[in-house]
Length: 311
Image (cartoon, rainbow, N blue to C red; front, side, top):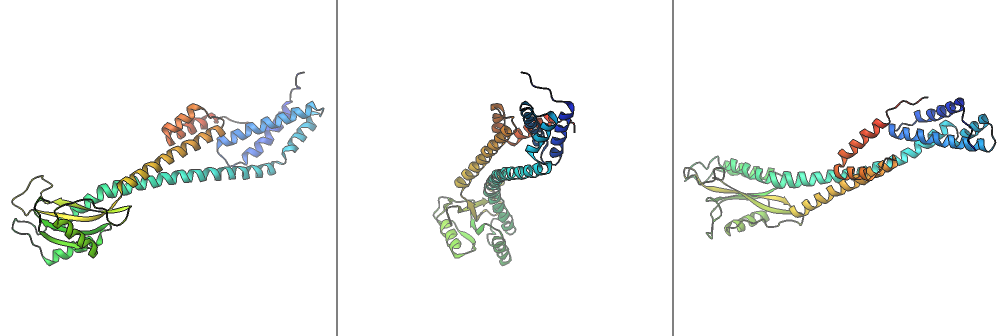
């Protein structure tokens, strides 16, 4: 037995009821469109069921709408539902982007900026200050004013434990390399620099904690040209600096970045399935391109909902 067709007036009434609720939902267009389609389907199904039970169409539509409730009550319940849904979604995204931020700080800040750049920068900066008075081969002493400037520079720099200057082009196999100047922020650093330089060896000896070491970075006066300049004094500056555990922090940064990538891909895939657009290709898109892939998906989804709805 074929179903009795629904009159245009009843269809218009259903559309008006659904539209009143849809306009009060402050959600993305895709969400509103999905709700509109699902609500209309449910109302039509309930209406047809009542008609099959023997209700006249006008009475059936009133009862079908009554089952769902007043439009304001429905709107209130929907807002609570979406608020909880977006709260959970926002929490996942917050964890996701916190991992990305931490990864960026570790890889870009601790490893890239400090370990790779600032260690060399501070060593060269200290060398430029020291070379003010080391201008001739015989001049290997400097004034009290320069000593004070060197000490103030070392004390002022975050991450610098101490500084030293030795005579000669660099560390040699000689048992003793004359130390011209040593300054440490504490007696431990001063003793460490003296012992290290007198033994004529430079090594990235761990100092302080597991996460932070102390290394001594050196810069020779002829390092810029790559050869000994006999017209100038030959000396080497040494800067004892904080150095973050490269292996630990690099590994941690990579792990955090992979966690961000995986969690975001899973979140985006769950979102696509909730939008009834999920598929293996969509999952691969998110896994391969991550945020860019989701942006492409969102643009395509938004365009698919760019169609007018009758009120």
